Length: 464
Figure 1 (cartoon, rainbow, N blue to C red):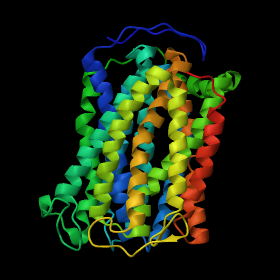
Figure 2 (cartoon, rainbow, N blue to C red):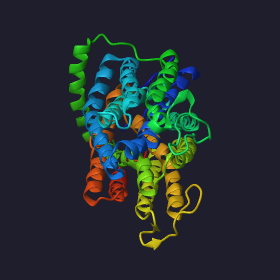
Figure 3 (tube, rainbow, N blue to C red):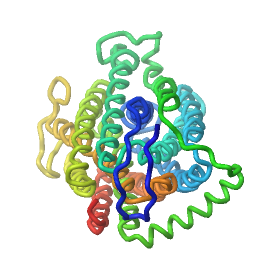
Protein backbone atom coordinates (compact mmCIF):
# COMPACT_ATOMS: atom_id res chain seq x y z
CA UNK A 1 0.00 0.00 0.00
CA UNK A 2 1.09 3.55 -0.50
CA UNK A 3 2.73 5.56 2.20
CA UNK A 4 0.78 8.03 4.24
CA UNK A 5 1.73 11.61 3.58
CA UNK A 6 1.77 14.92 5.36
CA UNK A 7 0.66 18.24 3.93
CA UNK A 8 2.72 21.27 4.80
CA UNK A 9 3.51 24.49 3.05
CA UNK A 10 6.49 24.47 0.69
CA UNK A 11 9.67 24.51 2.67
CA UNK A 12 8.00 23.07 5.76
CA UNK A 13 9.29 20.00 7.58
CA UNK A 14 7.49 16.70 7.47
CA UNK A 15 8.00 13.49 9.36
CA UNK A 16 9.05 10.25 7.74
CA UNK A 17 6.25 8.07 6.42
CA UNK A 18 5.83 4.35 5.81
CA UNK A 19 7.48 2.59 2.89
CA UNK A 20 5.46 1.19 0.00
CA UNK A 21 5.89 -2.50 -0.81
CA UNK A 22 8.95 -3.67 -2.75
CA UNK A 23 6.90 -4.64 -5.84
CA UNK A 24 5.27 -1.20 -5.76
CA UNK A 25 8.64 0.55 -5.66
CA UNK A 26 10.05 -1.73 -8.36
CA UNK A 27 7.11 -0.93 -10.62
CA UNK A 28 7.79 2.78 -10.16
CA UNK A 29 11.53 2.36 -10.79
CA UNK A 30 10.89 0.53 -14.06
CA UNK A 31 9.26 3.64 -15.51
CA UNK A 32 12.75 5.08 -16.12
CA UNK A 33 13.87 1.75 -17.59
CA UNK A 34 10.86 1.75 -19.95
CA UNK A 35 11.41 5.32 -21.17
CA UNK A 36 15.19 5.47 -21.47
CA UNK A 37 15.63 3.79 -24.89
CA UNK A 38 13.78 6.70 -26.49
CA UNK A 39 16.33 9.12 -25.02
CA UNK A 40 19.35 6.88 -25.59
CA UNK A 41 18.55 5.52 -29.05
CA UNK A 42 16.41 8.22 -30.64
CA UNK A 43 17.43 11.49 -29.01
CA UNK A 44 21.16 10.96 -28.67
CA UNK A 45 23.17 8.06 -30.03
CA UNK A 46 21.53 6.39 -33.04
CA UNK A 47 18.60 8.13 -34.69
CA UNK A 48 19.80 11.72 -34.17
CA UNK A 49 23.23 11.11 -35.79
CA UNK A 50 21.48 9.15 -38.57
CA UNK A 51 19.24 12.16 -39.14
CA UNK A 52 22.20 14.54 -39.35
CA UNK A 53 24.34 12.24 -41.50
CA UNK A 54 21.81 10.65 -43.87
CA UNK A 55 18.59 12.68 -43.94
CA UNK A 56 19.67 16.30 -43.56
CA UNK A 57 21.61 17.91 -46.44
CA UNK A 58 24.68 18.32 -44.19
CA UNK A 59 25.72 18.07 -40.54
CA UNK A 60 25.33 21.79 -39.82
CA UNK A 61 21.80 21.84 -41.26
CA UNK A 62 21.02 18.64 -39.38
CA UNK A 63 22.10 20.16 -36.06
CA UNK A 64 20.02 23.26 -36.77
CA UNK A 65 16.87 21.31 -37.71
CA UNK A 66 17.22 19.02 -34.70
CA UNK A 67 17.57 22.10 -32.52
CA UNK A 68 14.39 23.65 -33.91
CA UNK A 69 12.47 20.39 -33.30
CA UNK A 70 13.78 20.22 -29.72
CA UNK A 71 12.75 23.83 -29.21
CA UNK A 72 9.24 23.17 -30.53
CA UNK A 73 8.82 20.22 -28.17
CA UNK A 74 9.95 22.43 -25.29
CA UNK A 75 7.34 25.05 -26.08
CA UNK A 76 4.54 22.48 -26.09
CA UNK A 77 5.80 20.97 -22.84
CA UNK A 78 5.93 24.38 -21.21
CA UNK A 79 2.22 24.78 -21.87
CA UNK A 80 1.01 21.25 -21.12
CA UNK A 81 3.05 20.05 -18.14
CA UNK A 82 1.80 22.31 -15.33
CA UNK A 83 -1.81 22.19 -16.54
CA UNK A 84 -1.94 18.40 -16.81
CA UNK A 85 -0.10 18.00 -13.50
CA UNK A 86 -2.71 20.14 -11.76
CA UNK A 87 -5.57 18.31 -13.50
CA UNK A 88 -4.11 14.98 -12.38
CA UNK A 89 -3.99 16.22 -8.78
CA UNK A 90 -7.65 17.23 -9.03
CA UNK A 91 -8.81 13.93 -10.53
CA UNK A 92 -6.54 11.79 -8.34
CA UNK A 93 -5.02 8.85 -10.26
CA UNK A 94 -1.80 9.30 -12.21
CA UNK A 95 -1.74 6.01 -14.14
CA UNK A 96 -4.45 6.91 -16.71
CA UNK A 97 -2.40 9.94 -17.71
CA UNK A 98 0.77 7.85 -17.99
CA UNK A 99 -1.14 5.37 -20.17
CA UNK A 100 -2.41 8.12 -22.47
CA UNK A 101 1.07 9.60 -22.86
CA UNK A 102 2.45 6.12 -23.44
CA UNK A 103 0.05 5.56 -26.34
CA UNK A 104 1.19 8.80 -28.00
CA UNK A 105 4.85 7.85 -27.43
CA UNK A 106 4.23 4.43 -28.97
CA UNK A 107 2.72 5.89 -32.15
CA UNK A 108 5.29 8.67 -32.52
CA UNK A 109 8.20 6.27 -32.04
CA UNK A 110 6.85 3.82 -34.60
CA UNK A 111 6.53 6.64 -37.13
CA UNK A 112 10.32 7.07 -37.17
CA UNK A 113 10.63 3.87 -39.19
CA UNK A 114 9.17 5.68 -42.19
CA UNK A 115 11.88 8.38 -42.18
CA UNK A 116 13.89 6.58 -44.86
CA UNK A 117 16.65 8.17 -46.99
CA UNK A 118 15.37 9.54 -50.26
CA UNK A 119 11.70 9.21 -49.31
CA UNK A 120 9.33 12.18 -49.61
CA UNK A 121 8.62 13.87 -46.28
CA UNK A 122 11.31 11.81 -44.51
CA UNK A 123 12.71 14.89 -42.74
CA UNK A 124 9.30 16.15 -41.51
CA UNK A 125 8.36 12.64 -40.35
CA UNK A 126 11.61 12.32 -38.39
CA UNK A 127 11.33 15.73 -36.76
CA UNK A 128 7.61 15.39 -35.97
CA UNK A 129 7.98 11.87 -34.56
CA UNK A 130 10.90 12.96 -32.40
CA UNK A 131 9.16 16.12 -31.14
CA UNK A 132 5.81 14.45 -30.38
CA UNK A 133 7.52 11.49 -28.71
CA UNK A 134 9.58 13.87 -26.58
CA UNK A 135 6.45 15.70 -25.41
CA UNK A 136 4.70 12.44 -24.57
CA UNK A 137 7.53 10.89 -22.57
CA UNK A 138 8.28 14.09 -20.66
CA UNK A 139 4.63 14.65 -19.71
CA UNK A 140 4.38 11.03 -18.54
CA UNK A 141 7.40 11.69 -16.30
CA UNK A 142 5.49 14.51 -14.57
CA UNK A 143 2.88 12.05 -13.32
CA UNK A 144 5.45 9.40 -12.46
CA UNK A 145 7.53 11.88 -10.43
CA UNK A 146 4.41 13.00 -8.54
CA UNK A 147 4.15 9.49 -7.06
CA UNK A 148 7.47 9.78 -5.15
CA UNK A 149 6.06 11.18 -1.85
CA UNK A 150 3.61 8.27 -1.59
CA UNK A 151 6.25 5.57 -1.96
CA UNK A 152 9.06 6.37 0.51
CA UNK A 153 9.73 8.77 3.39
CA UNK A 154 11.62 12.03 2.68
CA UNK A 155 14.85 10.59 4.07
CA UNK A 156 14.93 8.17 1.12
CA UNK A 157 13.87 10.47 -1.70
CA UNK A 158 17.44 10.85 -2.96
CA UNK A 159 18.11 7.13 -3.05
CA UNK A 160 14.78 6.34 -4.73
CA UNK A 161 15.24 9.03 -7.36
CA UNK A 162 18.89 8.16 -7.98
CA UNK A 163 18.11 4.45 -8.25
CA UNK A 164 15.42 5.25 -10.80
CA UNK A 165 17.86 7.20 -12.93
CA UNK A 166 20.48 4.45 -12.58
CA UNK A 167 18.01 1.77 -13.67
CA UNK A 168 17.01 4.00 -16.56
CA UNK A 169 20.61 4.43 -17.67
CA UNK A 170 21.19 0.69 -17.40
CA UNK A 171 18.09 0.09 -19.52
CA UNK A 172 19.47 2.53 -22.07
CA UNK A 173 22.77 0.64 -22.03
CA UNK A 174 21.10 -2.73 -22.64
CA UNK A 175 18.94 -1.32 -25.43
CA UNK A 176 21.99 0.31 -27.04
CA UNK A 177 23.95 -2.94 -26.95
CA UNK A 178 21.04 -4.80 -28.54
CA UNK A 179 20.55 -2.25 -31.31
CA UNK A 180 24.23 -1.70 -32.13
CA UNK A 181 25.17 -5.33 -31.67
CA UNK A 182 22.38 -6.94 -33.66
CA UNK A 183 20.23 -4.42 -35.57
CA UNK A 184 22.04 -1.27 -36.77
CA UNK A 185 24.89 -1.97 -39.19
CA UNK A 186 27.56 0.22 -40.73
CA UNK A 187 26.57 0.89 -44.37
CA UNK A 188 30.23 0.57 -45.41
CA UNK A 189 30.65 -2.99 -44.09
CA UNK A 190 27.11 -4.25 -43.74
CA UNK A 191 27.96 -5.52 -40.25
CA UNK A 192 26.86 -4.50 -36.78
CA UNK A 193 29.18 -3.38 -34.01
CA UNK A 194 29.41 -7.02 -32.87
CA UNK A 195 30.39 -8.14 -36.38
CA UNK A 196 27.06 -9.72 -37.33
CA UNK A 197 24.73 -9.21 -40.22
CA UNK A 198 21.63 -7.36 -38.94
CA UNK A 199 18.79 -9.45 -37.60
CA UNK A 200 15.35 -9.46 -39.24
CA UNK A 201 16.95 -8.82 -42.62
CA UNK A 202 17.42 -5.11 -41.91
CA UNK A 203 19.12 -3.41 -44.86
CA UNK A 204 22.19 -1.32 -43.87
CA UNK A 205 22.11 0.64 -47.15
CA UNK A 206 18.62 1.85 -46.29
CA UNK A 207 19.68 2.53 -42.70
CA UNK A 208 16.87 0.28 -41.50
CA UNK A 209 18.73 -0.58 -38.31
CA UNK A 210 18.94 3.09 -37.34
CA UNK A 211 15.28 3.66 -38.20
CA UNK A 212 14.29 0.56 -36.24
CA UNK A 213 15.21 2.38 -33.03
CA UNK A 214 11.76 3.99 -33.15
CA UNK A 215 9.68 0.78 -33.14
CA UNK A 216 12.20 -0.84 -30.79
CA UNK A 217 11.76 1.96 -28.23
CA UNK A 218 7.99 1.76 -28.57
CA UNK A 219 7.83 -1.99 -27.92
CA UNK A 220 10.34 -1.74 -25.07
CA UNK A 221 8.18 0.91 -23.38
CA UNK A 222 5.03 -1.19 -23.77
CA UNK A 223 6.63 -4.24 -22.15
CA UNK A 224 8.37 -2.62 -19.20
CA UNK A 225 5.73 -0.10 -18.19
CA UNK A 226 3.38 -2.93 -17.23
CA UNK A 227 4.77 -3.49 -13.68
CA UNK A 228 3.91 0.13 -12.81
CA UNK A 229 0.27 -0.50 -13.67
CA UNK A 230 0.17 -3.89 -11.95
CA UNK A 231 2.05 -3.33 -8.69
CA UNK A 232 2.36 0.39 -7.90
CA UNK A 233 -0.62 1.88 -6.01
CA UNK A 234 -2.33 4.96 -7.33
CA UNK A 235 -4.33 7.72 -5.71
CA UNK A 236 -8.08 7.19 -5.38
CA UNK A 237 -10.25 8.93 -7.95
CA UNK A 238 -11.93 12.12 -6.79
CA UNK A 239 -15.60 12.93 -7.25
CA UNK A 240 -14.78 15.71 -9.72
CA UNK A 241 -15.73 15.32 -13.35
CA UNK A 242 -12.98 15.77 -15.91
CA UNK A 243 -14.46 19.12 -16.92
CA UNK A 244 -14.43 20.39 -13.34
CA UNK A 245 -10.95 18.97 -12.84
CA UNK A 246 -9.69 20.89 -15.86
CA UNK A 247 -11.18 24.11 -14.47
CA UNK A 248 -9.61 23.47 -11.08
CA UNK A 249 -6.34 22.49 -12.70
CA UNK A 250 -6.13 25.72 -14.67
CA UNK A 251 -6.85 27.69 -11.50
CA UNK A 252 -4.20 25.73 -9.61
CA UNK A 253 -1.53 26.55 -12.16
CA UNK A 254 -1.96 30.21 -11.33
CA UNK A 255 -2.03 29.59 -7.58
CA UNK A 256 0.96 27.24 -7.76
CA UNK A 257 3.04 29.87 -9.52
CA UNK A 258 1.94 32.39 -6.89
CA UNK A 259 2.87 29.96 -4.09
CA UNK A 260 6.27 29.34 -5.62
CA UNK A 261 6.91 33.07 -5.83
CA UNK A 262 6.00 33.53 -2.15
CA UNK A 263 8.35 30.74 -1.04
CA UNK A 264 11.83 31.95 -1.94
CA UNK A 265 13.55 28.56 -2.06
CA UNK A 266 10.91 26.97 -4.28
CA UNK A 267 10.78 29.89 -6.69
CA UNK A 268 14.54 30.30 -6.95
CA UNK A 269 15.06 26.57 -7.43
CA UNK A 270 12.51 26.46 -10.24
CA UNK A 271 14.26 29.36 -11.98
CA UNK A 272 17.62 27.62 -11.63
CA UNK A 273 16.15 24.36 -12.88
CA UNK A 274 14.74 26.21 -15.87
CA UNK A 275 18.21 27.36 -16.90
CA UNK A 276 20.42 24.34 -16.24
CA UNK A 277 17.92 21.77 -17.51
CA UNK A 278 17.65 23.80 -20.69
CA UNK A 279 21.38 23.47 -21.19
CA UNK A 280 21.39 19.76 -20.34
CA UNK A 281 18.65 19.03 -22.89
CA UNK A 282 20.68 20.78 -25.56
CA UNK A 283 23.90 19.03 -24.53
CA UNK A 284 22.34 15.60 -24.93
CA UNK A 285 20.46 16.53 -28.07
CA UNK A 286 23.65 17.56 -29.86
CA UNK A 287 26.22 15.20 -28.32
CA UNK A 288 26.01 12.47 -30.95
CA UNK A 289 25.49 14.99 -33.74
CA UNK A 290 28.64 16.86 -32.65
CA UNK A 291 30.73 13.70 -32.73
CA UNK A 292 29.37 12.75 -36.14
CA UNK A 293 29.79 16.22 -37.61
CA UNK A 294 33.17 17.33 -36.20
CA UNK A 295 35.01 14.00 -36.10
CA UNK A 296 33.09 12.03 -38.71
CA UNK A 297 32.09 9.33 -36.23
CA UNK A 298 29.90 6.58 -37.60
CA UNK A 299 27.88 3.82 -35.97
CA UNK A 300 30.88 2.05 -34.40
CA UNK A 301 32.42 5.12 -32.76
CA UNK A 302 29.05 6.52 -31.69
CA UNK A 303 27.94 3.16 -30.37
CA UNK A 304 30.98 2.61 -28.16
CA UNK A 305 30.76 6.23 -27.01
CA UNK A 306 27.11 5.71 -26.06
CA UNK A 307 27.80 2.46 -24.23
CA UNK A 308 30.63 4.00 -22.20
CA UNK A 309 28.56 7.10 -21.40
CA UNK A 310 25.61 5.07 -20.14
CA UNK A 311 27.90 2.97 -17.96
CA UNK A 312 29.25 6.09 -16.25
CA UNK A 313 25.70 7.42 -16.09
CA UNK A 314 24.47 4.35 -14.24
CA UNK A 315 27.29 4.54 -11.72
CA UNK A 316 26.89 8.29 -11.32
CA UNK A 317 23.16 8.06 -10.64
CA UNK A 318 23.62 5.37 -7.97
CA UNK A 319 26.41 7.28 -6.22
CA UNK A 320 24.60 10.59 -6.59
CA UNK A 321 21.46 9.30 -4.89
CA UNK A 322 23.40 8.26 -1.83
CA UNK A 323 25.32 11.55 -1.74
CA UNK A 324 21.95 13.31 -1.98
CA UNK A 325 20.58 11.56 1.13
CA UNK A 326 23.82 12.17 3.04
CA UNK A 327 24.74 15.74 2.10
CA UNK A 328 21.56 17.12 0.54
CA UNK A 329 20.34 17.66 -3.00
CA UNK A 330 21.73 21.16 -3.45
CA UNK A 331 25.47 20.29 -3.15
CA UNK A 332 24.98 17.42 -5.61
CA UNK A 333 23.31 19.70 -8.14
CA UNK A 334 25.93 22.45 -7.75
CA UNK A 335 28.74 19.94 -8.25
CA UNK A 336 27.10 18.49 -11.36
CA UNK A 337 26.53 21.93 -12.90
CA UNK A 338 30.17 22.87 -12.29
CA UNK A 339 31.40 19.73 -14.04
CA UNK A 340 29.08 20.30 -17.01
CA UNK A 341 30.26 23.90 -17.46
CA UNK A 342 33.91 22.78 -17.43
CA UNK A 343 33.14 19.95 -19.86
CA UNK A 344 31.35 22.34 -22.25
CA UNK A 345 34.42 24.60 -22.20
CA UNK A 346 36.61 21.59 -22.92
CA UNK A 347 34.47 20.57 -25.89
CA UNK A 348 34.58 24.14 -27.18
CA UNK A 349 38.39 23.97 -27.23
CA UNK A 350 38.44 20.89 -29.47
CA UNK A 351 38.43 20.64 -33.24
CA UNK A 352 39.14 17.94 -35.77
CA UNK A 353 42.81 19.00 -35.93
CA UNK A 354 43.47 20.86 -32.66
CA UNK A 355 43.00 20.85 -28.87
CA UNK A 356 42.90 23.73 -26.35
CA UNK A 357 41.82 26.06 -29.18
CA UNK A 358 45.24 26.53 -30.78
CA UNK A 359 47.37 23.42 -30.18
CA UNK A 360 47.62 21.47 -33.47
CA UNK A 361 47.40 17.69 -33.43
CA UNK A 362 48.54 14.95 -35.75
CA UNK A 363 46.10 13.49 -38.31
CA UNK A 364 43.97 10.58 -37.04
CA UNK A 365 45.73 7.25 -36.86
CA UNK A 366 44.34 3.81 -37.50
CA UNK A 367 41.62 2.34 -35.33
CA UNK A 368 38.83 3.84 -33.25
CA UNK A 369 39.20 7.37 -31.89
CA UNK A 370 42.50 7.71 -33.74
CA UNK A 371 43.14 11.38 -32.98
CA UNK A 372 43.92 13.18 -29.74
CA UNK A 373 40.83 15.48 -30.05
CA UNK A 374 38.59 12.44 -30.40
CA UNK A 375 40.05 10.83 -27.30
CA UNK A 376 39.57 14.02 -25.30
CA UNK A 377 35.99 14.39 -26.56
CA UNK A 378 35.35 10.79 -25.50
CA UNK A 379 36.73 11.47 -22.03
CA UNK A 380 34.68 14.64 -21.61
CA UNK A 381 31.57 12.77 -22.67
CA UNK A 382 32.07 10.26 -19.87
CA UNK A 383 31.99 13.11 -17.36
CA UNK A 384 28.66 14.23 -18.86
CA UNK A 385 27.24 10.77 -18.26
CA UNK A 386 28.56 10.60 -14.72
CA UNK A 387 26.92 13.84 -13.55
CA UNK A 388 23.77 14.11 -15.70
CA UNK A 389 21.95 11.43 -13.71
CA UNK A 390 22.70 12.94 -10.28
CA UNK A 391 21.73 16.39 -11.59
CA UNK A 392 18.29 15.27 -12.70
CA UNK A 393 17.66 12.83 -9.86
CA UNK A 394 18.59 15.36 -7.17
CA UNK A 395 16.44 17.99 -8.86
CA UNK A 396 13.31 15.93 -8.42
CA UNK A 397 14.26 14.79 -4.91
CA UNK A 398 14.89 18.41 -3.87
CA UNK A 399 11.44 19.46 -5.05
CA UNK A 400 9.84 16.45 -3.36
CA UNK A 401 11.34 17.67 -0.08
CA UNK A 402 10.19 21.25 -0.60
CA UNK A 403 6.51 20.83 -1.49
CA UNK A 404 3.35 19.26 0.01
CA UNK A 405 3.04 15.57 -0.86
CA UNK A 406 -0.69 15.84 -1.58
CA UNK A 407 0.01 18.53 -4.19
CA UNK A 408 3.07 16.93 -5.75
CA UNK A 409 1.47 16.64 -9.18
CA UNK A 410 0.98 20.36 -9.66
CA UNK A 411 4.44 21.18 -8.32
CA UNK A 412 6.10 18.56 -10.49
CA UNK A 413 4.09 20.00 -13.36
CA UNK A 414 5.61 23.35 -12.44
CA UNK A 415 9.03 21.66 -12.28
CA UNK A 416 8.44 20.38 -15.79
CA UNK A 417 7.33 23.88 -16.76
CA UNK A 418 10.50 25.37 -15.30
CA UNK A 419 12.54 22.75 -17.11
CA UNK A 420 10.70 23.27 -20.39
CA UNK A 421 9.31 26.79 -20.50
CA UNK A 422 12.59 27.97 -21.99
CA UNK A 423 13.82 24.54 -23.12
CA UNK A 424 13.45 25.86 -26.62
CA UNK A 425 15.91 28.64 -25.82
CA UNK A 426 19.22 26.75 -25.55
CA UNK A 427 18.53 24.47 -28.56
CA UNK A 428 17.21 27.46 -30.49
CA UNK A 429 20.26 29.54 -29.55
CA UNK A 430 22.53 26.66 -30.55
CA UNK A 431 20.63 26.24 -33.83
CA UNK A 432 20.76 29.94 -34.66
CA UNK A 433 24.41 30.29 -33.64
CA UNK A 434 25.34 27.20 -35.65
CA UNK A 435 23.57 28.56 -38.72
CA UNK A 436 24.98 32.05 -38.23
CA UNK A 437 28.62 31.12 -37.66
CA UNK A 438 28.54 27.91 -39.73
CA UNK A 439 30.38 25.96 -37.05
CA UNK A 440 29.24 23.32 -34.60
CA UNK A 441 31.53 24.86 -31.96
CA UNK A 442 28.82 27.46 -31.36
CA UNK A 443 26.87 24.86 -29.38
CA UNK A 444 29.12 24.39 -26.32
CA UNK A 445 29.87 28.12 -26.21
CA UNK A 446 26.18 28.84 -25.61
CA UNK A 447 25.80 26.09 -23.01
CA UNK A 448 28.60 27.39 -20.77
CA UNK A 449 26.58 30.55 -20.14
CA UNK A 450 23.45 28.58 -19.31
CA UNK A 451 25.20 26.32 -16.79
CA UNK A 452 26.88 29.25 -15.05
CA UNK A 453 23.59 31.14 -14.76
CA UNK A 454 21.83 28.07 -13.37
CA UNK A 455 24.49 27.54 -10.74
CA UNK A 456 24.30 31.16 -9.62
CA UNK A 457 20.52 30.97 -9.21
CA UNK A 458 20.72 27.70 -7.29
CA UNK A 459 23.26 29.16 -4.86
CA UNK A 460 20.46 31.22 -3.29
CA UNK A 461 18.25 28.20 -2.54
CA UNK A 462 17.97 27.02 1.06
CA UNK A 463 20.09 23.87 1.43
CA UNK A 464 17.89 20.77 1.33
